[in-house]
Length: 481
Image (tube, rainbow, N blue to C red):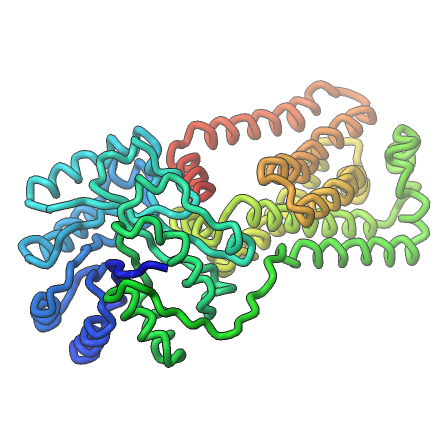
């Protein structure tokens, strides 16, 4: 494997200048020639950088921008760009400035929005402007406003043996980006060097903390980096490593198994539930008659089904999140919709919100249907009629989890993953029509006050979501990362 590569680090600058200078000395000994950094930088550290002859890629530190970020910038963003660019300009070591990382690069509206900022930086004397893009983003000619692109090369247990670089000509720098599950191993780094070897003219970028940790942990790794940067042949002894297997998240599978177990327990312990389980679908009219004639009096089966449905929707959302959003994509989603992180920044927080919103929707729906109907004397009647069709979600979510575990396409997962939400929404409409049959008067008014108004609200929310550029672009960006 040929060596003599330009290698840089994405430098997490220590707060103490003496520690920063110590790290610069380490980088210099290893043959590191490029520093990607974000101001502020202490004057003493700047002097050391320039004395040692490092090339600096400055970073303005804007992450996950959408069109609105630059088209309607707030004062804090403008001030941030001015302060950080001022700290980088007129520094002879700074050869390029990065305007943002992981943006919506292939949207023409986004490219138009960033144009004035790029022009301003160019007029200020910036040599080159770059963006940083994720491994999933497809850089095209639409990214021509950048002088070069830093491209993540993401390595996972699933792709380490089949890894290749798509659209290499659009990348000016390759960034080593291992998945968290293989971050502690050296084999992914060796694979990174292998797949980028034929593009020897393009620099490599490594996280500084990862590099310094490996230098400390592996006695021969310093020699590896030195031969990579200074010699014709790379010396890279890799210790015997067994990488973890790539596997799907067990969370939705565990939830589903627990739900099936609870269904079996409820079926065996509740004669009422056991006798009525299939009657809603096989003898619908008689089932509804039983409800309104108070033959089914207990609210327990309805409560169980509503809770079961909330867990099923949480599991479905968990599957869709894993299939559609990478960890970085989910970070972008949290960045633009921070309320999701109220219950934690992990992926499970989205499922927790889905669980709570499902319960809230069920509660509001039952109360709404009850107070709109003058002949219904008990909330149990409405709750039972509303809850029974939600059992379909047990079948739908089971199919979804099986397809997910089998590695089905993300598009198919997304389509099926939406169905449990749609079924709960339609449960309101079905219940209103069933209840309307037992309204002695003003049936049409009841339907207008329930199904009619409900569908109107849903249509308004749908139109708002589809026509909200910030929401659609946020979802598009998160899915693209």
